[in-house]
Length: 166
Image (cartoon, rainbow, N blue to C red):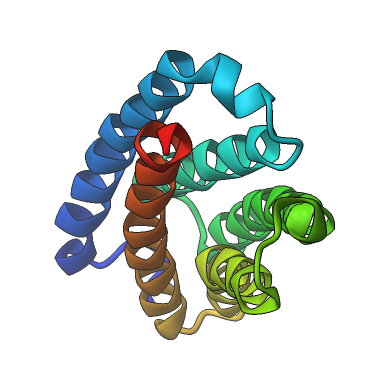
């Protein structure tokens, strides 16, 4: 890597930043529309927070990627942001697992929630470390995390907007 983002990646990160901002707005609207219902469940406020934090992770990391800076600095920024978002995912998963029995959810649902949270944020941490080590593959790891977050954020928006009313 030359020390600057390869131009082939710029459009991807510009699109990711815009899409993340739009989807974060959708999740915030979903939360505000159903806030009273969300607060009735002990695990849903943290799930909502984790969903928003993941989208903000994309937004901030995409913007940081577009800033001319060394890959070592960029990688460090992404690692710090990824670990913060990962911690929120872990906290959300812990509350979801704790609420499993109370809500009558199957164990497999709780395991799936934990795995999906990890799939979203761990690629950013790995990607950041790889960028710090000047490996091009860090950008691909981040891209995988971006795609995973978009997929699972739509799922979270659905749960917070529609499923909660069932």
